Image 1 (tube, rainbow, N blue to C red):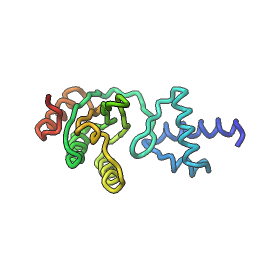
Image 2: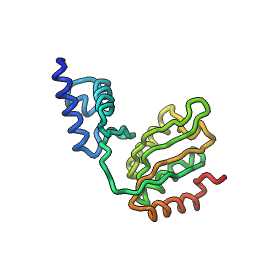
Image 3: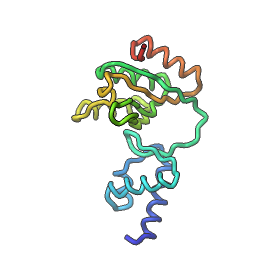
Length: 172
């Protein structure tokens, strides 16, 4: 494909991500009749040019400027308690933006999640349970962090309190 065609496709991809709540690389690849890897490359180039596109467990989304509150939770629990943690946060109206662990060799490892609904939780847990995958928290004895977006600080503190009651927060 000519260079001009690549630029046009990338502009289209950008618009598709901007105008969708969530869209997968596979969907975009089918639409533009290119490989999924080409779309992944297009997204990388768009990000490098400053487009705030994030990859979530369900696909790409445009990170719009929000007036939401963002707080950081420090959690520690078993892998069996992961579903309870995620369901608690989203059922209380929070969005789990990511998971972060501090690794001895690599430093901070971040996985973008974008989990905001029970459907997202089920999708994530299904892939974690059915695949040959390990949670990032398995590298750090269950200790991990989550950036959580919600309506305001009071709402965040309610989520944090509930996780504390359930024994899912890290206590030093």
